[in-house]
Image (cartoon, rainbow, N blue to C red):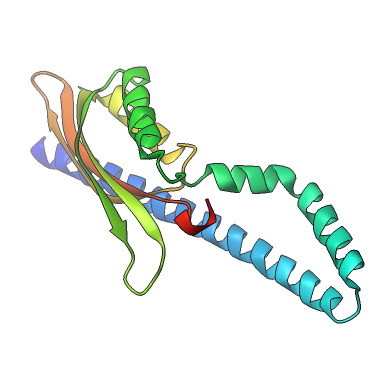
Length: 177
């Protein structure tokens, strides 16, 4: 019976981790393809368009992609708005009927990169369905999230699951604000 719970926990943790990595890769590939497409269009136009034509083209492309640009901009934490993701995490916990507490929040930057991220650790306790709902909603948060660490322990007597999740989200470039 213990092996069954261990296998279920490991399978669940691996599934959640795998889905978060898959989500991150899909978002990265979508963003990369759009960037390449825009660069290709602009480089093709650059040699033949005058300044006014180029400005009109950029305006048209911007208007056509306004919703996508807004979605992308809202996927990153704006400078000075770090509290929003903490509030969002707490709101998700309440909605999921999970008792959660944020155990740490730290600024990080990727080595060799200018990318800044915010790392958040959350301890939580709840029934199985509530915990699954909580984790799924963390992954679906408006901000781009990357689950870095996840642990989960079940108590067969109480029926409660206790765990900790660490995830990071990217911050918008402060030099452009």
